[in-house]
Image (cartoon, rainbow, N blue to C red; front, side, top):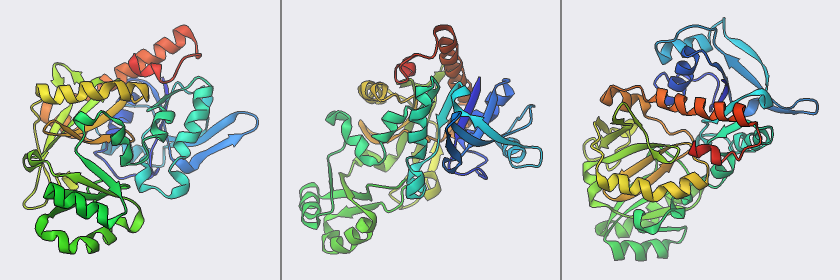
Length: 344
C-alpha cells in the first residue's frame, strides 16, 4: 500500500502517539508510508493535488521513538507526492489544536483525493460535520447526557437549578481543558465561570453522571464495530486523580484495564449506524455508565495504553482492514463510494 498520514505538525515528539504506531507498523510490513501536515498541500494544474511529504528509510522500527528519530533524521526522504497516486490518505490531524486556516485543510484536500479514487479515512465529508462537540448531539438521545449548548447565562442558570449538579465545558477544544463541575452552591459564581468558558465560543452544560466518579472507558470502534484482536477489546479505563473531576491522562487521570460489558456494547451498537453513515473508520468512544460523553473521530488516541494493558497489537487489526480495502479497490477499480469502504 501507498499511504499518506496527515498529522498536526511534521516535527512531532509524541513518541507514544497512536498515529506513529500505525505508521511504524505499516513500514515494518513493507508498506510505503508518507507523513505530511495541513500546510503542505498544493493544487497543481498538471497533477492536481500534491503534498510535500516526509518518509523514513526502509527498515524495521520496533518503537515509535525510533520511527520518529528516523523521520526527523538526516536520512529521512522529503519529496512532493501526487495524492491521486496513493492508495490511502489517513486524516489524523486534530483541528481543535490548529490555527483557523489549517482546521479544514485536510478535509477539503481529502475531498479532492476521493475524486481520484483514493481511500480517505475518516471520510472527509463525515469529518466536516464533526468539527466540534455538537456532533455528539446527532446521536440517539438515549445514549447522550441531558445537555444545553448556549452562551446564555440565564439558560445555564435554569439548567443548573433543575439538575442540581452539572458539568460545564467549551464547545471547542479537547483534552479536558476548561471543564468545571458546578453544584448548587456555586450558582452565585456562575457568571464568572461562564465568562471564562465562553471567551472563545459556546458553552456546553451537561448533566452530571454519578458513574463518572469511577472514571470513563475509551472503547475503539473499527468500521463501526468494537475493535477486537486476538479475543481482546481495544479499550482502557481512566479514573480520576485526586479531587480532579477530569479523568484525562494528562489531567492527572490513571489508567486501568477496561471490563467491556453489555451496557457498553449496547452504546456502541446504537452509535454504529450514524458512524457508518458518516464514513468513520476508526473512532474512540468515551463512555460513562450507559452514556456517551465524547465521540473522538479526528485522531483518536490511546492504542498504546490499550496494547500495554491487553498485551495485544491492535494496530495490526487496523492495518489488516486497510489492506482489505486496498485489495478491494484494486480488484474492482477506483469507482467506489468512500463511505461504503468503512463497512469492509
